[in-house]
Length: 376
Image 1 (cartoon, rainbow, N blue to C red):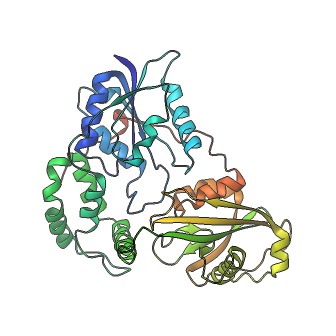
Image 2 (image 1 turned 30 degrees about the vertical axis):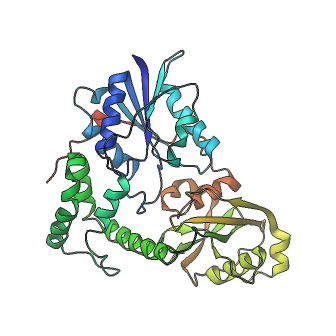
Image 3 (image 1 turned 90 degrees about the vertical axis):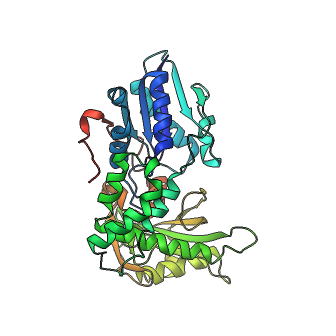
């Protein structure tokens, strides 16, 4: 019997395979700690549920006899293997006494399961795949139950409920009741229609290059412009990430250098009219962000140019092109906006500015913290 068993995943959403792993973990250890990954992000088709919502699904699906021994903790993605593994260890440390025997429970599904090899001091309990369900299939059925409504509108409730019943019916044996309840309740929120539109856009986007001999690699640029302790951000006008905060930037054009592309995107999206010489003098760093999962659109590698104008007057800005708005935001206010950022742009800001993400992600959730969830 282990002192502590760990289960790590995104659980977007929780299904029967997750519950089988959870049951095995509870049978192996006195206490079980579940790490809910991809925490503190904006809702997207890939991550439609907050970590608290996923914790409620996990705790509600746990066997009653073991639920009191279960604790769910959030961990950010970080888009950095070493930093993510350190964050997992930091989350586990307060729950494991000196000399504790720790088991890491999981199964190798594909390359996304490589993290199971990153903790050699914990004993790996590797299991075969538990059932044939995967969360992507569930999300596709849920988001594709009806065609996305027109912007600014939502589906009629009765029509939506009927479509959801039909779409989810083949999956019900693999959906625990708390997951069924969350899927149905979430479909009646404004966020659902926006997720549907983004999901449909991404499907169409990928279909355009589906016949390529190999998946394309996209090259983008972003501009991080600082002035008087503020950073210049935009609100995205289009999917993916419509309405979310982001750095001004975009795809490099065929006849541009990275530098030229960065200046063009900055001008187009913010109407910032600073001379090239001023920006060249203000350039402090260029960093490449290339994590394979950083963008939902596919393999996107971004070259981020960091500029600092010091105490100069704030340039006038306004949204343009793919930006519905442009605004100067105090650097001190960024940490509170984490769940409003597109893709990994919050973590890009953290890379350059050090936003104090070494702190604990958040307090975890126990069974006593969760209200019972039932299927309507």
